[in-house]
Image (cartoon, rainbow, N blue to C red; front, side, top):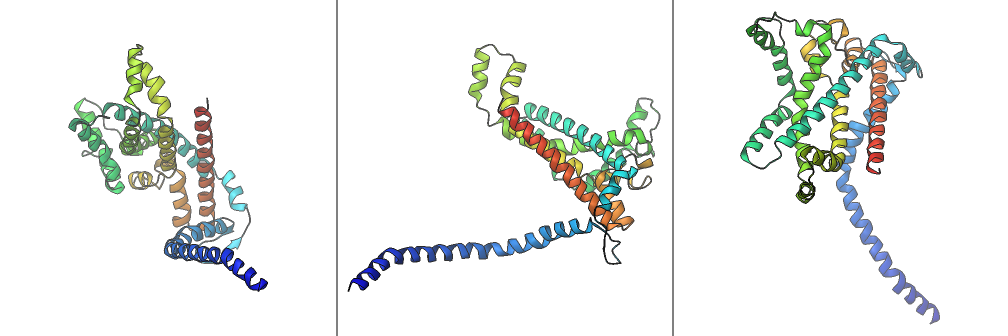
Length: 316
């Protein structure tokens, strides 16, 4: 009798718990089953290529013969490769100029067209259009604009003012400035929309209180707008920087026809076009994988530094 009472007590205490656990397992199993297709695609198209790329970066592989393990030789080669160092130097200059100009112009446009009137909406749409247009079409248009022939728009405008034709795409000193111009024009519309969303979250009462205290427009911008826009600015800078590091179409479409993949004398050579050149033109797939991982580490470290600086400034 005593044993039965204990069992009944156990049943009263453990029965509902087991039932609840079973229901939780069934509920979780349903969620996991629904996630399985995504997990399979995520593993097959992202995790496995990443692992395979890391392995190939430690080998010599031409796509025909089996990969041969060489350890860190590809990464040591990067430090002695003058063409890679030239591409890295070009990329850093391009990224710095593109990020500063894109973020600056985007913020100026957001401040100018932040309203809800039809005029502001039309202007925002016009500046946002390049962000939703095919990049191939955009860069073909830029190649037409800077063409050295008679039909080139830039030289036509120069001719109206008596200027001589300029070989824009064949002049090494103009390559990076032309690319920065294209990146700024293409990217500031998207960044402008992000800034407008950030500006609209700032309460108007702050500005009214500042105006009552006699603050000028510049003082309001420096004391209210910039500090409250800091998270949005960090997001815009980080995403613009990552996109600039991964530039490829601008070099491949606009400058490839001039000489090689990097333009005249490799004046426009960036890291990703160089990766493409080594991997799919010269079939050095192991070395190209090492370039890809070097690019990943550069972006990761710079993004981490930017986020740490942003966090430190918020705590000041």
